Image (cartoon, rainbow, N blue to C red; front, side, top):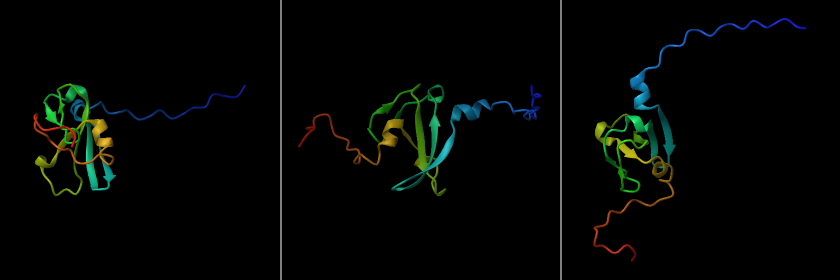
Length: 108
């Protein structure tokens, strides 16, 4: 029988920061139209209603989604857009969203 291997104990892990968890984890993503700073918003932190620019539908409170803004650092808070996660992933495959009035024909 071989002796047990002693492994060093990991250092103390810092406590979780609740506000950082609620804000989500950010990353930089590169798309055809440039680099975007993207942060996932968990459903527990989604407290307001937003309009998704991908599908022009509402993102209701409690629905997990993401926030994206240009990563060039030149924008401000007004450049942030809240997206459904699926709409963000499909944005290269879709054309620009067209808002139609209720009486406009859907096709043609």
